Amino acid sequence: MRNKNIGSISSGTLRPQDLIPCFISEAKSQHLSRADRKELRKIASRVARVENGEFGESDAYWQDEVSSWDMEALVEMLNSVAPAYFYFGSHPGDGADFGYWLDPFFPESFDGLKVNDLSELANLPTPYTGEVLHVNDHGNQSLYRCVRGRLYEVWGLV
Image (cartoon, rainbow, N blue to C red):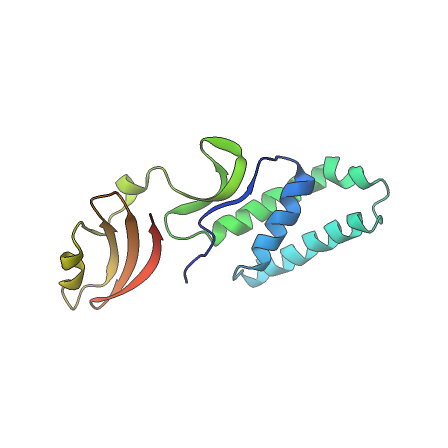
């Protein structure tokens, strides 16, 4: 399944009251496991109670360790649905920019078939099954899942 959210989903803030609702919204748009959906409902319920004033002083939750645990759980949840060779977290160059980022060790860790020319993609052997990385002369990258010679794009970076 293609992830439409490669890149930033929140930038310019480290405040839990900004990040947690943003992460909740992102998690709701993903295909999560049953356990993660259950945990997401609990976190969203806590945040809704805070917004309704049921937690008492509105800043109490945001400054409490519970919000830190919730943020950690949300990051783990989103990391679990990150595209292949990506992670969810802060950008390596900007700690206040959260999103899906390509693993900095991706080129070294990739052990599938690498091709540089589109004609090589068209001429894959029919029985081949595995991952195929196409990198063009401009550095654009596309990862494909290949099943018996048929290609399915997983993601592309321009």
